[in-house]
Image 1: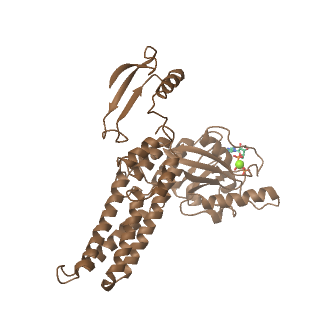
Image 2: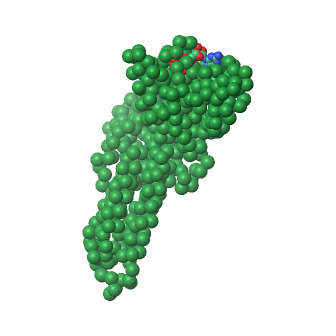
Image 3: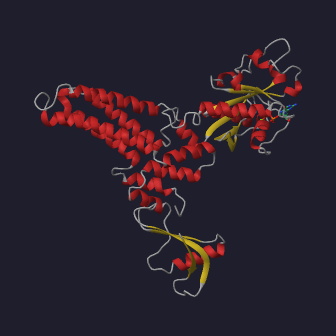
Length: 419
Ligand SMILES: Nc1nc2c(ncn2[C@@H]2O[C@H](COP(=O)(O)OP(=O)(O)OP(=O)(O)O)[C@@H](O)[C@H]2O)c(=O)[nH]1
Ligand SMILES: [Mg+2]
């Protein structure tokens, strides 16, 4: 790195800035080509003057969006999972997204998928040896059985990647959280508390919220798209009933849901009261509960026992006085982190391997071809080999190390200019 004066190429007397220049000699640069980086002060006028000066050099033009990264890919520096990781890293808004993107950009997924592909190819090599030489003469006995055994294991590995509850994809795109419950329970008050602003209208009138209101938030380092919904009840009002229908669909389509109940309407000093009938069908084993308005009842401490709700997924608060809200926030963040496990098992096989729908599609295809291979017996090795070849190709498409011109554009298109 050299300190230097940056001058206009056509008027060298004209000093544009006092900066630094770094020369990266090929192939030890990001793009694997020769790269010169000029560091100048960040004032808009300086940057504009330097860019305009550079454009006077006949061999220079501004980069297309994603062009540097594309050159890095063409030069073999990055595979597609790393390219995607890099793009996700630039876009990351929460800690979990940053951690996951960094792992991908650093080549962890690349390594996983490359190993998978080379294992399939190893399997294929055994089968092809059988085709070329035939069992018994030059090849030892049992090769086909061994190939089958390996294929079964490979398929298990792929299935374990696929059975991740889409955690990687969900963290990338945001966890969809639906707030639901009966009217007037404090759902919109909760949204406002989480967003720390008056995002939703709150009034004492039951049925205030009618449409769905979404806010993107960072909860415990996880990206969460929180949706406030209309209170669930039977209603003659046409507009409200559409809202109720939308609320139900939202809860059913969400990744996790939080049921808000108003304590004075849910518990009685003597009898535990059943959950409101509109709410009941939407409750599943992962539903979280927020029992609101503790300020309006006398003994809030044992209501979770009374209602038989799990301690790790139910909290009592008053959104008006703020009582219990910090316990709720930290408890709910832990519940989310537990559900979308990313932090505690980093680097282990538990961490999600699939972060893009594209990966899932190719892995499903690979698995189908391996299963097809397993249908053949030793007589049909030629056909079986073909299935394995397709399986290896499908995995290769994830890293883009084999012909995939069509997916390249899609991957690079979303890059910001200059990277
Ligand atoms: N006393 C008390 N009132 C509360 C509390 N939380 C919310 N409220 C009040 O309860 C009323 C309803 O609150 P909202 O947040 O609009 O309730 P909602 O569940 O969104 O209601 P709908 O949109 O009609 O379904 C408002 O008057 C709030 O001020 C609380 O903890 N204690
Ligand atoms: Mg509301």
